[in-house]
Image (cartoon, rainbow, N blue to C red; front, top):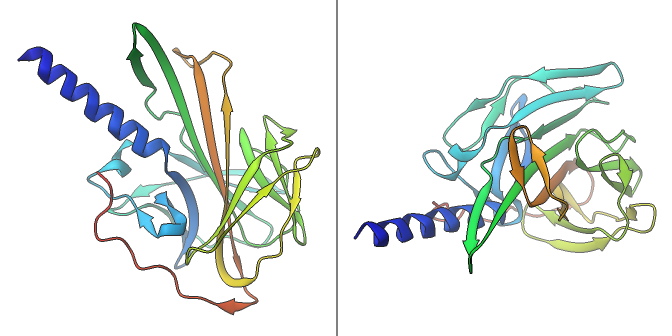
Length: 237
């Protein structure tokens, strides 16, 4: 019986880990502040608390030409909120550097996998410098650039998704850049993932592989407006 319970517990943990890692975090305006959500932006799916939202331990800061300023996050039932208007020329970035490392054993081999979710919100398309490990930043106009550990990331796949579900897949060139004209008015998320198979350590925790996922969100003021998708009946648990 204990063996069966142990297998069930392992299955549930693996299910939660795989569900969470298939998600991403993103930042979006919320009244006069910004909130960090967890789920699927293009499906209008937001994980809740109690639930998968409780597994996150994010940190956030405002970044501008004047420097960096830590921001206080408050967890609510549907998101992490941070008060204060984001001024033009300022980015808000957030990341979870403490998400639990997933441990899986198959055929006698144990793999420790680290998942590193992050997000950036910008008020406009003014060029900014990368600060996240995996970062997507505006360069100006319709041009954007992807960086990994401060270096341009070529041939990266970028999913551009509108709040109502429209999406387009882009790939960066050799300089980590791509151009896209956004057709609709409203919020967009640019999602990029990168798998690093070089073993390493996060603090005292060792891992065999690392998976990074980052979103850049912005709100476009011009274009035809489309309504967002209705929220799903129930978030994943």
